[in-house]
Length: 624
Image (cartoon, rainbow, N blue to C red; front, top):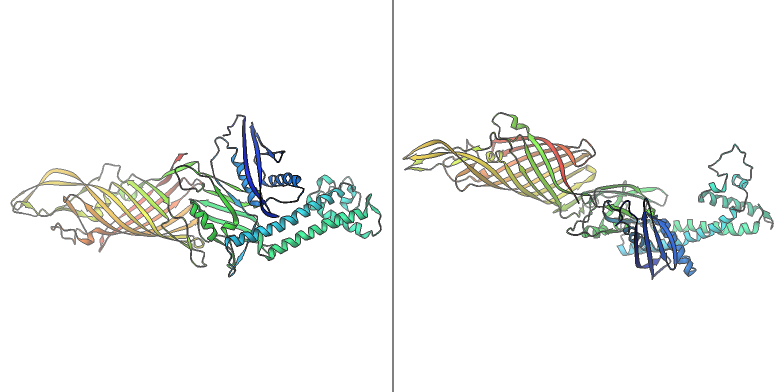
């Protein structure tokens, strides 16, 4: 464990079985590492095949590749390139060694590929077939790249021997001339500029057919060296065209947006035959929290933005996701992250865990209807909720940019709805019908009165079906829920003499317990990052438990108020809900919201009540 302000040394050793693009045979190597951190400087001292070299932290994967190739080839007198999978395996191992104290723990590393097979409709291939094609193509390409680099290094030596005047076409550069784009000094030259100048040098040498000298060098030597370089460069260009003819193209860059255990958006820039960059992207949110999700990458297609004639697989964009294990969890999703235009040549993408655990989504709000005199709606209310992802994989709808999900999530919630003391208890009614000294009529209240006077509730919802249409910025869902509600009621004491009922001044407070089952269908609109809208409808079936002290009725005007039998329709009600959220800042842990609810009794639209809730919602977080 690395700690800031302390010098620390870590020694590690690991055996690797590596492969090369030029050969599929497995070779064993042992890498020994000494990692040292002192003040702000940290570095790896790597011992490989009795050769030692130093790499600064963080490691550049391209520098690591060149060092490994150089050391291994120096021992075998060959010119081979370590395969991408073996390079990433070593890189990930080295990256794990330092663990900076106070840093956010790593969730895993996405390992992007540099090239990808682009499939066409009707030309599907298996994952193994695609992987083999790309591996063989990369072996061919790396061989051409290595040969071109080797010939370039030999030819570039010539440029060290020619005068600076050659850099500007043989003209002497005046002191006032600062044409840095051409490069007036050898130290100013980029590799691309050097390669262009070698072509010019070759042309000058070829124009002089006699075996003479040019810039003090033999023209025969210049021709031979530069011709070999030009031929290797030409061979490299031909190799690029060859692998493109096999529908294998370079990945230029990747953007990825991860939220709530899903890859919400991914964009992959792939260069086509005409050297255009086509953007391939997902058509639905991709689960990214479980091992099953990772395996599903092989079946997840990404399509170009403007056509559906070609596609790529997510499993081919990333060679692997090296997720870190952790105790007491089966959720391996990283923190909400957005990475834009990442170039695969830079190596694995580090994804970190969230520093905090989201315990609950907490809402504090007031019901504006409670401002009315004698309204039982609570002026101060508190609600907590938590959503758990279950099955995060999705099914695409044909070739459309939409998808279905089943059993996607599970919600739990609870609320305390009445903190103030006024209108806390529901007053019960009674028709006071008695016979032979026995009270026949029950105390009662409407089904919706019991709901309106609730002071506490707890419940849960299980998603059944979810339909997502990203291009339309909407999601529809069908959930099934169950909830418990507690309602305090107050009733007068009564005495019965013959057929007469005497109502006492004294009252008694009782509790009404209710269980409600419901289906809920809704639609959620994602119009803008900081604004969201949800409309839903649910059909409630509510059963009241009162120890036979009172009953629920459908309507004060239409129900049988004397019978103790509960009407079937008295248990059913409808709820329409509109939910609007607004985030005033970029901090996603807090937002304002408005929620309007309209309750209607089944088969009696004249029995209803409404809620207009305005408040603030925030995530109750716990630091890991």
